[in-house]
Image 1 (cartoon, rainbow, N blue to C red):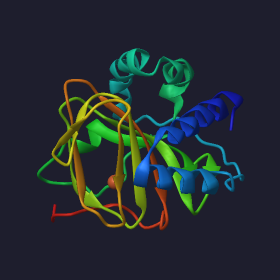
Image 2 (tube, rainbow, N blue to C red):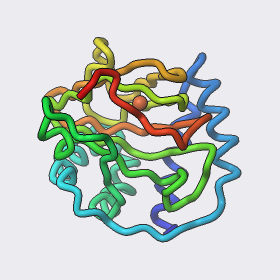
Image 3 (cartoon, rainbow, N blue to C red):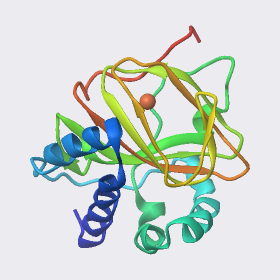
Image 4 (cartoon, rainbow, N blue to C red):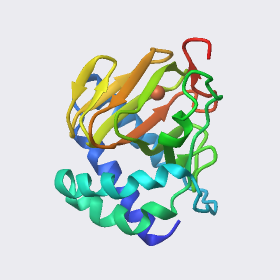
Length: 196
Ligand SMILES: [Fe+2]
């Protein structure tokens, strides 16, 4: 992992200390697991079409979290952006408008089989339909007010999803860029709640 990427991950980890209550407890658990992730693996930039939303996301980030924007900006286009769901006939363009770049996880630059940390990017007005997964998930909105299972949440908000809790998101006028973590069963994938 490059020094620049390590600095970005450290800054993102620092954001987790702002979580309170149940989210704060999960953030503390995640932080302890992150301390145990050490083995490093190379990664390559992806050609994911999602990167076309990065300029607008970074513009929002410069307003909402300029310290993160300064570190993420030079790295953003070169991160391993990907999308891992089965195709949906009802949403044929979904894979073009949402995805994530993982920094820590089973197949990430910093390997761990017990914790994940990365960024989720969702294009404007994109609906990320209801889904669930065994891992406990903590989101922290960095930029882009969005609807989280019916509630509009601003930058700075933390959203916790317990094991197999169904959830969905819908981005607003700006791209949504959020920090996410997974703990627990981080190997089993996320699946759509309804048949596709
Ligand atoms: Fe999730």
